Image (cartoon, rainbow, N blue to C red):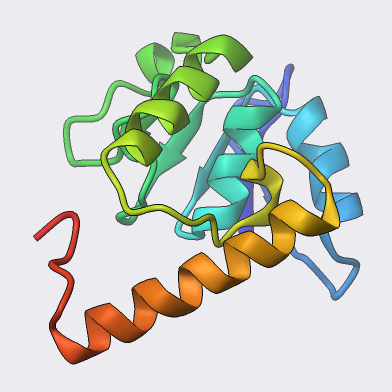
Length: 142
């Protein structure tokens, strides 16, 4: 279940996935004014679509422009007016990735779509995970 604020409605509309996948959800995100979610993926989709996200949980992108962490004193109107732009989201991801290890897990962040890049990335990740599990490589974020 997700909550999507749409224009003209006094309260959020709750959207059930119903197994229709992201295509239906992406349509709702684009039509909405803001997305409230516990789910990491849905909030990130909202940010990429240029919609504010009201995050009711913890996510890797919680410090990204356009994300408001929900709490008892959250100003919903202010959260709805915190509209992210693609450039800010890209800068946020670039900054986050620059502080991390080499290798990309989520393919949407690949720098290029070649088979060679994908293969090199798999090898890099395999070495990274093995080193992390053996304690030879320190974790990035503590």
